[in-house]
Image (cartoon, rainbow, N blue to C red; front, side):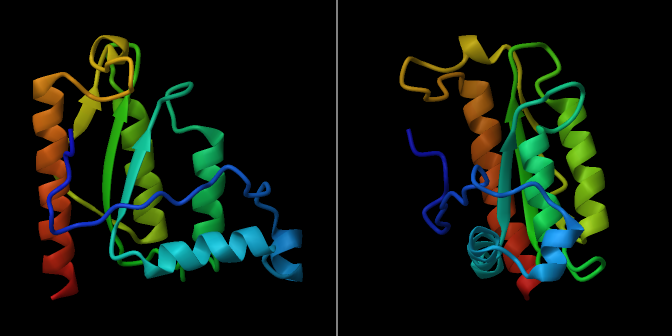
Length: 159
């Protein structure tokens, strides 16, 4: 069921324990959990974000994480970082509005999104099995292509 190319390694960076972004906290110094989060992002050659869609946008917890990563303003630790985006939803939009919003945020942060393919898994409950594995072949093919393109994009941008 592995969809990633052998030439890349994926690891999850948790955003669950990050405090709400607040410039007052930032001025006093990043809390340990924020320092750890930022250090993990700084070590990454690229970033893959998988997102649901809530109220036509990304979840607040993801926006919060991006706010912590975007500091200091105009000098984000993610500036110049290749980015791939995908998402799944229960409806027919397949997270297209969330991904569009995420691309806007990425531009402000200075991330470099992979141009294609756009991976919108629609009607997700019908496309995953009981173990949470993606079973829809069309969606699997798109995910595989996106990850291949992310690897190529990263190599291209890193020279």
